Amino acid sequence: MKTLLPILALLGILCTDSLAAEAKARPNIIFILADDLGLDGVGCYGSDKHKTPNIDKLAASGTRFETCYAAPLCGPSRCLLMTGRYAFRTGGISNQSWRQNGPGAKSADENPIAKLLKQAGYATGMAGKWRQVGETPRDWGFDEYTTDPTASGWYWQTNHLKNGEQITVPEGTYAGDVVHDFAIDFIRKNKEKPFFFYYSMHHVHGPILKTPDTAKEGATDLYEDNIRYMDKQVGAVIAELEKLGLREKTLVIFSGDNGTANGQPSPVGGRMIHGHKASMLEGGSRVPFIASWPGITPAGKVSKDIVSFADPHATFAELGGAKLPEGMKFDGRSLAAQLRGEKGTPREWAYVQLGDKWFVREAGFKMNQAAELFDMSDAPFAEKPVAAAADTEPSKAARQRLTAVLADLNPAGGKQEAAGGLPQKGGGGKRKQETL
Image 1 (cartoon, rainbow, N blue to C red):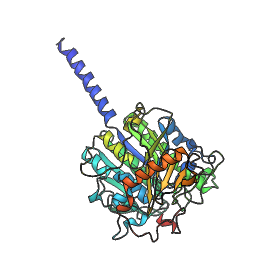
Image 2 (image 1 turned 45 degrees about the vertical axis):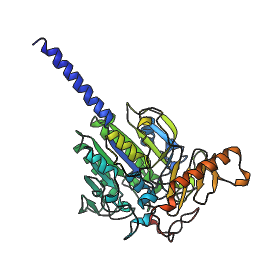
Image 3 (image 1 turned 90 degrees about the horizontal axis):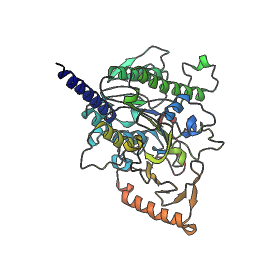
């Protein structure tokens, strides 16, 4: 018996170490996606106006990536996030792509990250905005979900879809709280196994309405009130993870689906970001991206590595032990190494597309579909056209590199559609707010 006890103790230590290693290798994953939130809406990205203490605290506990690129509108961004594949491959090139007979991505033709993680043993759930990815969240691999029938601004409506069933809630129910409560309930129910949750916030998409805190806070600026409520809900997710003892087992990423909506910009360090939601300028697609996994992700780090919205797909697949199928081209570059504090293999450029417009962006330059080159040394505040006749050695080399990248990608050879009704060069066209 005396001999057996040390052996049992050793086995117990080995088992504990094994479980700890598994938790590190296969973390819970929560991806919080804000709507229409550019860099200028987040305190730790230098916003002069908006205070986001909980999001800033999340950044302080992890790594803040300075140069992350989504698409300039929500539908293409979310499709890229779910599939890990560029828009010209999937057909998810605009918000209108999922209209009847449109080219929008179909779950049966793709390998959505939720479906891959589910196959790897993860519980999967989502709550919030979904409509512009087509089909239902369940089609895309989510076990449980709650969403709404509108494209945006559901805040005070009284019905939503929960796991495919139409649910009516009492007048005076705030949709942001319905979404949040569903997320918290999912986390609690699945605390004993690895889970992936996609928290797709409605904040701060228009119409900008009051929140439950508007009267309590005496708020007169409703947009600021919405920013504050969004930040509060992010803090509540983190608090729940800590309460359940899951914080060090959970990778939390906070990001935005496109730049700030036109009409709501604010300065960063006294300067305005160039461009906004729906534009092909820097402010249209450059978004916050914060990753926090205590004990694994370096705390307080600021990374200049370029991030694409295709990258979470590759990252989550690697961390969750999900195998990407062979024979399909994926465009993501895993950030798993960077999340562990290692150098990894950062991407050299990011590709951004909206409709029949696109560009490829590297650290100092970008080139668009018209082969126009821009000096991005003063981004995100300015981008300066560079004529071939005025090339310097750096711009000449960049022109050659980016021309080769676009030739290799060949976006025009993918699933395109007629340009009618799509955002035009430099602007975004005139479309009803609810379609954005």
